[in-house]
Image (cartoon, rainbow, N blue to C red; front, side, top):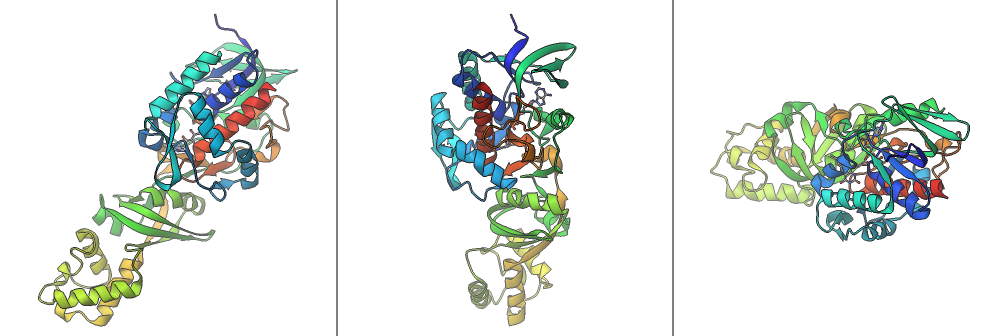
Length: 406
Ligand SMILES: Cc1cc2nc3c(=O)[nH]c(=O)nc-3n(C[C@H](O)[C@H](O)[C@H](O)COP(=O)(O)OP(=O)(O)OC[C@H]3O[C@@H](n4cnc5c(N)ncnc54)[C@H](O)[C@@H]3O)c2cc1C
């Protein structure tokens, strides 16, 4: 039979809520701990992480990989490090493996394995999971909290809000936690989508839709610049791919920015220019549409030549040194304008959120309401693409879970 009075109620059975529940129960098994989850199952978003493989952490340096209140983030992350994440997952039956760019994955490379083991570990230790329980309202009366779900009320001595942000709302996180916490007097910073595809003026990208290049992308905005290297995907609307997702936060923040793509980042301008001179000599009996064939992706090469103002039908023999320099410049600095992002529906994470200033970084307890805690994406901290957001979810879940159980 379901108990309706709990020692600890966790609102949200996502990454941080599950970590909080397991940590709280492990800290003090005699406490009654319940997860209230809106969906039909816990961990729905987790299933989609890392392209279904769940990039659950990052073995590299975490410093410099977080945004928002970075000092607060560092304090929490020092209490639950990457090696704690690996130990935690080992303790619930998940072996971890480090792959490209120091990203950590479960060795099975299956996000559903991670969700299942989290779920089984919570069940085994006695966490009560209430699925299809979307919490509508939380009140604080005396020393306890009253939780309202579809006409039924529950009470809890302590409440951990783990409802996520507003990214990918189809997975259940629709921003309810912002309402709960602002009703308790907490403040919220502006929220924006991050780790999301970038919309550009499409005159160049439309012609290249579907093509991937190994390039280096630099974004310049009024707030600064950022450069990232990796596989860039041209799309109908603009750009995608890991380095694009990485710079997207700044596009969302500034609304627009100037993009420059280096299509051959490992070869400098002088070398590219001398390669073109050599190719001109070898291909002197052909037309310019063949100048970059076999050197760059065919369609990319054609767009580069056209954007340098040179006709594809020009005989290669007629190309002047200045023409080759102009083509080299386009290869090294392929420009376009970012005009926005694909929004929260497509974003992996929410930048901004509940201000950390009224939370204690050592416990994640509210400084305004005793017994109230918050975790994960809901707070004004977000990480880069590469396992940093899940590391934040586990770390905040752990800290809040053990603190609430102490
Ligand atoms: C497609 C995609 C891929 C990603 N890949 C990665 C990756 O590989 N590595 C990485 O580090 N990060 C990744 N992320 C980001 C990461 O998944 C999130 O940052 C992380 O899950 C946030 O954890 P959370 O506990 O704060 O919130 P969530 O995991 O969003 O969980 C919140 C939970 O609360 C529930 N809820 C909300 N409101 C209520 C309510 N009123 N009552 C009851 N329940 C409620 C929701 O249904 C949900 O289950 C990805 C995100 C997406 C969308």
